[in-house]
Length: 278
Image (cartoon, rainbow, N blue to C red):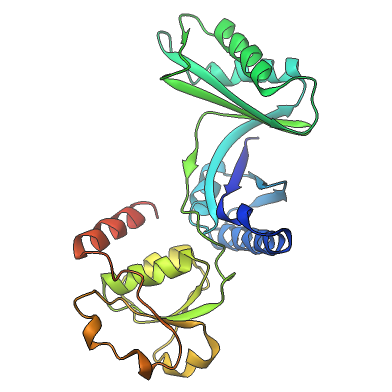
């Protein structure tokens, strides 16, 4: 069964206690998203990585890409960390992923104590792949196919693709905000604050399916004023041209304008990209 290798980025910059708390929040969010999408999966935490095994790998990847805090994912084949075992697994992995006439490269990295270094691993695995496929060539500068090998302690993960996610911080790690969502700019403003780890309480239903795709527990209210005492701030979809009409003193909490520096075309383009990935 393939294993999904899950990476975060910004979380790794935090102090150890904060990183541990964020990792716990991220794992909970991953489980909640998978559960909401009815995907059965097992999540195992590693050092700066999570490993996910799911009955439906493709469905799990689609779910996990919408979890804020995840920077990228890779669907991997896993084997032991011995050189011979890795080379055999890499050769098998390559046969369905490279065609005659194509070029390839191997990028290897490792953590832990092993009898080989990353350069030796790349050379040996590259040789195994070369011998297992007829008519291919090595190109370390601009290959048609790149095979990645990541060894962590007693396990090796072999893959050929980094699947981009939205990174940011785990949803809920930065408290709550209330957001007015009555147009595209308000929708994107709420989404951007969610990406920074804030759980949004939403007034308005413009494009609400987008926000629900990233937070299955999204809370909607008809009046945000009664929630302001419990949140970190208010989020408004205000453009630079309309800022003069906003009196921030009436809110009693900090007011955030995530899209104030964006043009309408930039807002529309970003929302189009987000919607295409749901």
